[in-house]
Image (cartoon, rainbow, N blue to C red; front, side, top):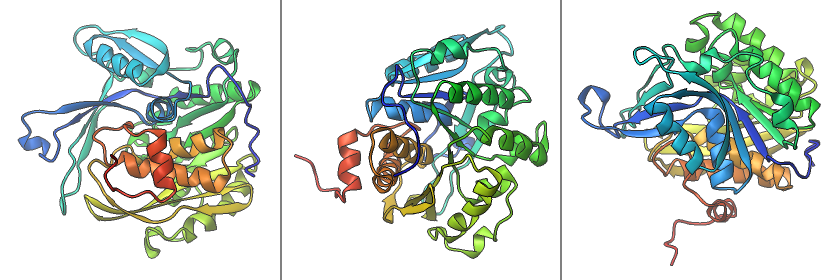
Length: 359
């Protein structure tokens, strides 16, 4: 099996810590020509909690910042709609310049034209979160089976990484399995600490992590592990990823599992898609699918949530990888960052289901 000591019950199956954001999406129209946008509520850690609640019908929560102004109200409504229990540190907006809920701007691209993503994280409330802002003893008191956070939140400020570390220690003390999505974004780290500081902060967090999510580039940049040139191998070849595991576990022997998606972008709307995991010395691979992609944002979070669901549900590791692979694939067929799939659809696709019409 997987070697993870997952408690059988708890008030929450899954709790995440991270930043909530809203993503403005003009569809296939570039922003410089856009006249209207859809608004999606997102954030890697929230996405995992929302997917597990809405698709997989688990009890989930998110610890995060919330600003009391209309954008915050919009985001909070979506948190409720996805069935996620919020634990908010509240901030008052001054009516002029914040604090703010971060905005992400992302068109979808089309064909040979790639999506373009940029941010406004100025005066972001989530970046102001710090140790002591949450009563972890109270939150974990009635039992949390799995706790999760990620590298984007760690990179927001000098205090957010320290908050994750505080939460990881509390989660381990309360008997929760812990996971961390490396999601290394050099652009964010360069705003205050640089890549070297990023490795230092992330490595300290990973000392308390059971399961890592991240590809070979995340392992290299997030943990400072040297590896072969990623571009020298095919994007769907797991050799580089599996070849780095020994160094990961040498530095962090507490890590019991590492998982990632494999994606080969043939065009904006056509991707080769697979997924792999290493758990307690054994490797597992999902099939390879050719995806027709509507919106690629959130596919990786879709994989992580399906994979975690499989482990929480007591599935064998190879089935957990397939469930993550299947859910991530389905998520790319929906607009927005969070799931619209059902667990029945995920299980059917994981077993080799087709796109034949369901009557």
